[in-house]
Length: 477
Image (cartoon, rainbow, N blue to C red; front, side):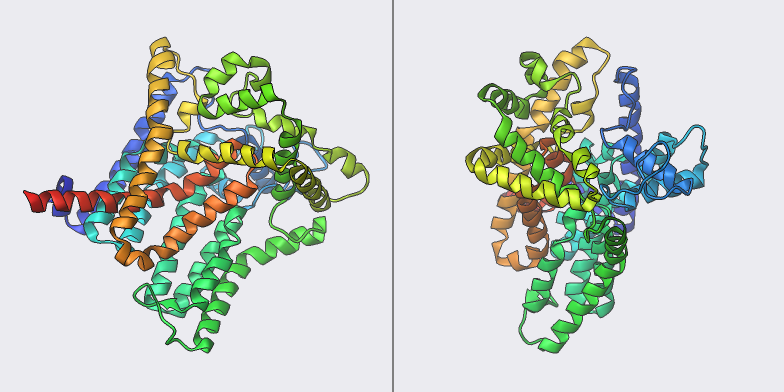
């Protein structure tokens, strides 16, 4: 019969089914939220959404990459360019009105149409490193988790970044498996595209270069039979691919802002992290700790500290940053970012223990990345839904479900430890993200949103665990 009867389907039928199911799931979830959410909540909008729309509107109107709503429309480098360009492109296709601005519904429709790419790419990645049944189970798991469905109707960069990152990993595995230079070039291009969508992925370039340098290749194994000249050629081709998309944006920022980097998030992030560690009182620390586990409870117990706008109270520290004062001194956006980074590091070093505690608690939000975002943002009209059902779902899909999936993924790798070398590219990407998020991301909400693009990889290894247990059960029977 096969596992859940999915093994009996032909490959074409299985792909067709998960494609259709992905779109239907998105539509159902969206309609449910539109019906249940209170009228004051606009579906699809998070704190950064309006900025993305403003950037897209200014791009279409010929005002450049600016987040200003009024003249002189100064350029900015706080955000990466790909997602605003994507919004601008979709808006141009569906029709754009300078008076009404960006139509969020058009963006959501386009993202729903793209959503099946996440499921399909998980399936194709899993097929590269696992058996067919495991790949199908991993894809089916992604189909069933609401988080990956509703991601499509949030106007956030992660919506586009997730399939791009998955596509990069698929092409990279193809490159290692085949050894063809073209795949190394395409994987470099895709990593460059990832970096100008979410800069956090840029430094994974160094990890890939290490894999190539140590002879990782055909059969997804290490081999030193490859000549150094061959390895160097592959490294160079990969770097050219990355550079083609990243360097133009870095040069643009260098010429305008005298700062040769993709974005200016790093300095402000470090400053916020250091400032929180320096300024938190014991009572505020308790409120923050409670917020990590239940935002609603923290809001009730510490209303003055958490504030009315649940999920964005960390942003108040951004407003404390002396950006305007530094701008008055004639510093560019990039130079301001460098000053904030130095000051943030100094504050963190003065309070290393508090900084590490803050990082550790915020890092736990990784396990809440499996919670559908709407459960964190929307407030249902119905009292029973609002007070009983929603909190119950948050409890199930929060830490318990997150811990369970991560435990299963680790167990799946352990049970197949003889083939662990095949899994190393995917494992290294997961580890890289965890490392970066622990030491760089200041906002707990940032941890949760940034980790979402790599959570599909957990389900591949969790499927390994389930397939082993299922096979053993069938053998006993």
